[in-house]
Image (cartoon, rainbow, N blue to C red):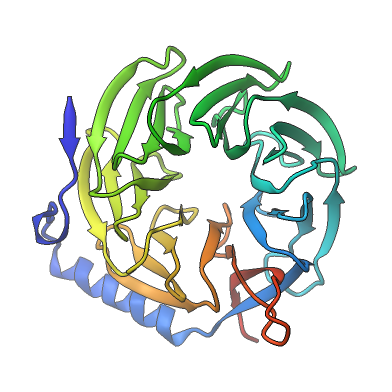
Length: 340
């Protein structure tokens, strides 16, 4: 069965009581009254590709073109100086990384050197390594922490058993496959594709269940609501679509961006969604209404945004340049610290 996402005025509209509208207006005013700060963290003099928080929101990992990842201890109120630990071993750029959802000190990295590595964030040591067939660009954990899915530039999907770090499944697709994700129970697996569709597979069989015609151009990124109600898809058509995960129906689209959407993330409560592209801002919108509550100014296109799983802190990294020398600036930022 194929389902289509509708956009703009076609999207499903839900009437809201006046009290709900007033509450929303009050929340937006509070966002705009409070003075939130972004703080910069220098990773290296080279571009940061990916940022990710651990499960309890105390550590952030960054992956860079310089073939390293770094672990940062982040105090949620921003009062102490962040300390970093370098993870060395890859021989090509670290394009994406993700934390074990059940272990706050284990992080997995995917690299262009065709390897996937599992690291202990306390010691900085690589504890597991798998050599795969292509340049790895996407990685995600199953929510119960038992499996890791990896996608490469050749549109091949590999799923690893975390305990043995050996492949359980390998599948090559004859179309472009971009970001991948499990739903919260782990029985659905989602593929975003260059065809503008989201392929829904059963797990662990990987049998096709549904094809969602989500966008008019390629789908690049996907995020799962931490409450398990929705998923969102970012596309080259500059739109973000929101889907009901039970019915696989498109609820609405977010339309503030004008360039292909590179990265999206839900906050810990599922109330807000952040999206970013080559536009020089990150859009933060209310999930239920689609209304923008805040925009974070940026100096360059963004590669990665991710909300902290416990606090309204948004980490983001992009193609920042040193304004004096016009060279890559290895920096990520965290938005949401309140000014004193």
